[in-house]
Amino acid sequence: EAGVTQSPTHLIKTRGQQATLRCSPISGHTSVYWYQQALGLGLQFLLWYDEGEERNRGNFPPRFSGRQFPNYSSELNVNALELEDSALYLCASSSGQSASSYNSPLHFGNGTRLTVT
Amino acid sequence: AQSVTQPDIHITVSEGASLELRCNYSYGATPYLFWYVQSPGQGLQLLLKYFSGDTLVQGIKGFEAEFKRSQSSFNLRKPSVHWSDAAEYFCAVGAKGYSTLTFGKGTMLLVSP
Image (cartoon, rainbow over all chains, first blue to last red; front, side, top):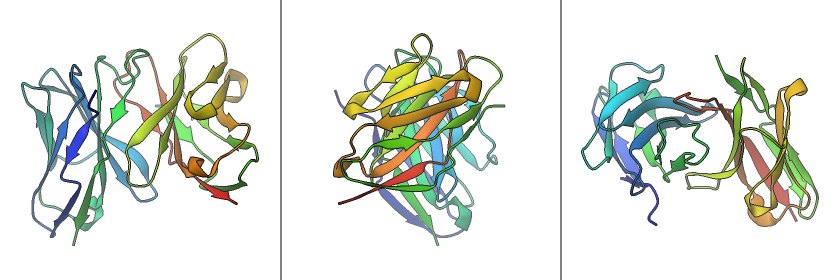
């Protein structure tokens, strides 16, 4: 089966611009999670979408937003980019309604490397 | 709130030697515990998971982990490391019905010849 796919692989933006990152989950998975992996900070939870609805968000400002489409793919938007937004953004999917589902743990994509200059 | 501590930022192990990566968690109820591995330029791959039952869990690639409730630990082990094991390893904690996983900051494993 195809894994979680993310695009683009790399994205370079300047401060103040907007970035759009895309994620296609594994077929049959309805939940999509977004994580930010900044250098030295590990993975920080950003957003969780399930069945087209935002179910939970992490401790990030409102300029981080997204949506989930009817085909369960998802988009992460980051407005008014700041230098500290430079990071690897990872998308994960699962078929359970919880990241802790035993039978459906998180499956991660390879990420989008966002660089803000 | 949940938290995960991986005390070692970097570890260097000789090829063929044994490996133990440390993970300590903080959570009030019964945790669900995970180890993920991230190779350069890749996403995270699940190595193993613990939900309940036998406290020694076997995973892929010859890895195992032991849940010790009294020490709030879930250390990852491998008896003999291969050069291809060089990667970053993340411990994560969740719980029943909890919508997200909390990750540690990772341990970078370097394998020397």
